[in-house]
Image (cartoon, rainbow over all chains, first blue to last red):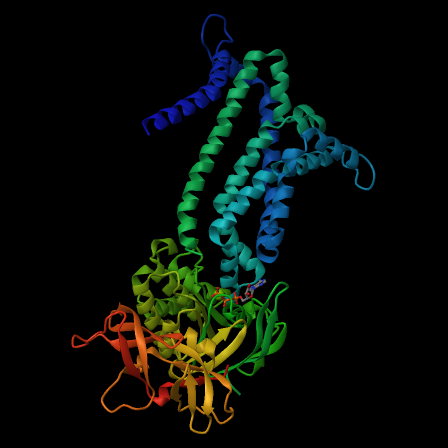
Length: 266
Length: 353
Ligand SMILES: Nc1ncnc2c1ncn2[C@@H]1O[C@H](COP(=O)(O)OP(=O)(O)OP(=O)(O)O)[C@@H](O)[C@H]1O
Ligand SMILES: [Mg+2]
């Protein structure tokens, strides 16, 4: 028993060291822009570079549109599969995992080849490219989007709630807007934050479609010749991601307290 | 014509037959129970009335209108689910008022109806609570109020009490029945609990493997089961196969023991095999002068069930249960004793199958 506890803590300690040493080293390095003393110079320079701020805003916008499109696609899909074709669930789940297996580089070349000519040329203007970027991000975010939305629907027994609403006279749009979506709020927020975090850090799709307009390629480029600032950027994007994760956790826990108890026994 | 008619309903699933040849007429204000073991098609039948499943064949007629193809949100049928299915994002009052809001009733009318419903279920104080702040029993009462608020033509309940514990089950079923009587609403209640069905129904529909076995009042179902399945499922009847000796006098033989039955045997011939059933409480120790239906049994087991004592007897090749009131003066035999028991000819029921 005692021995067990010791080993538990031992492994927790090892993994913490594994995660935090590189992070600490990066942080430490980012403070050494001025020789011989610790300073926030790298952070200051980073803020002063207009490209960085502009790309951060661009990527955030792309991220928000990705979230919108992703949720518009996934919420009705997951809902209808649960309601009308529960046997298709494993299939959908499998499809949602494909982005893990197909490398982003394959995806982006596929997109460019398909849409550079033919019936629907999108690569010859900025709007088209931005749209391709968003569409690609929806695909990359699919595993997270699907999982969050599906978990949210599990927590509230959507099928029975739908039937209850139907028997009370509600039509499909009413059920969606008044019953399903309000109860998925925390699941959808979770999906949104995860997607945003992915889009902010993504490199491959962004490089090939929009280049240095996006945040990911900018971090990379800064890293090529301004090492201190690149470290600072990494730390900042880590902090952004963590703040988002913390928010997910917070919102998720509140959502669980509201949702799961109320859904009652099956 | 009856208020609700299910006409030759059947439901075939790709993998199974859910319901077959279901015929039932329900009068206005009647409380009907569907009773049967798991998988016998109770829920499927109820869901066809609600409109969540469409029958493969047959028609459903409600108040003179054919509703077979009408979508569930246009049927005006109230539904109560086992899992309560309250909307977690709405308060109790919003849940109850949901159906009225859908119907675009004025705010003041909704408010008044919600207050009425809260009073009906004795939860006046809980209007602003959220479902997860209520106990299971309270949640189910809210679900009942929500279903009743829209003044449905029929109230459908699918095992509404099975997620609750035993004490609340008994009190809440009485409450459901009282409310149903008070409003005079037609209700169909699905359960697999025979005691529940017997205690609250006007009539019971006993189902087995997708078919109706017997329809009758609780009294009829309990005392005069017509099939072997009903006899075994409702109460715990003793059944045995016997040979007909004298059809006109109602005499049969069970492993050589002569029994007289008051049931009609005229259709049978001497030598036919039939099933008989005897309720455990209709068997008693022999009194002075008793001659009819007397037989010996060896005591195999004695169980105390509170107000009754169940004695397991081996009679010939079969095991019979005999129930007797647990009064202090009771003189119980010992396990292994042979006792002489009797039952009246009215207690010997001949089953149709
Ligand atoms: N959607 C479906 N697809 C295929 N078969 C189904 C479906 N729904 C029900 N069945 C089958 O129909 C039969 C009746 O099911 P039903 O749910 O009506 O039973 P039940 O009497 O309500 O049982 P329980 O007491 O377990 O709720 C079962 O054999 C079941 O497997
Ligand atoms: Mg059922």
